[in-house]
Image 1 (cartoon, rainbow, N blue to C red):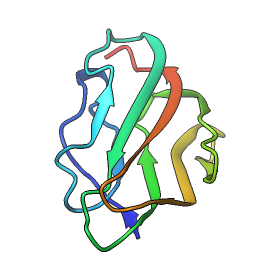
Image 2 (image 1 turned 180 degrees about the horizontal axis):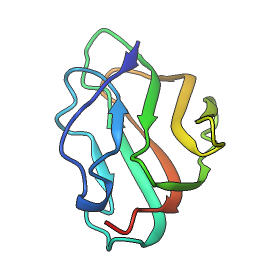
Image 3 (image 1 turned 45 degrees about the vertical axis):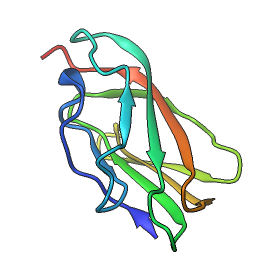
Length: 116
């Protein structure tokens, strides 16, 4: 199952949308606050709080004007990046791995957040 999450994220990453499941109140993104226009590594910690179902995918929609440099290649997962018509990355997907119940995974991207 591919997980989906839509929620409050760090101020400079407010446009970031995660697809990580319905019951993911504990998904964490770090750092939690960054300065506008800053470059960094952003880590998403995804717990599988289900008792009977593996998490097998994570979809990350990037905010407009976020400049993705790279997405982490996580062992056991296939990482792909979608690009828009202008060649700018718009989403990152991790598929094919497994997070068993009561475990978590970490996925990371590097890039620059928008100035505003």
